[in-house]
Image (cartoon, rainbow, N blue to C red; front, top):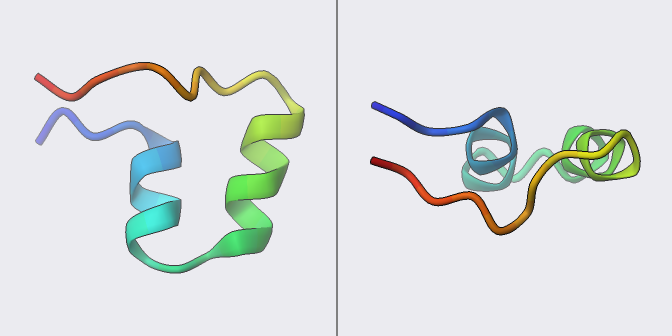
Length: 33
C-alpha cells in the first residue's frame, strides 16, 4: 500500500510504462508510506 504508479511499474518490470510515467513528470524521489 502507498505505492506510486512508478513503483508498481518498476516492481512489475514494465519498463515502457515506467518510461512514460517519467517522461510525463512522475516524481522519482517520492517515497512510500
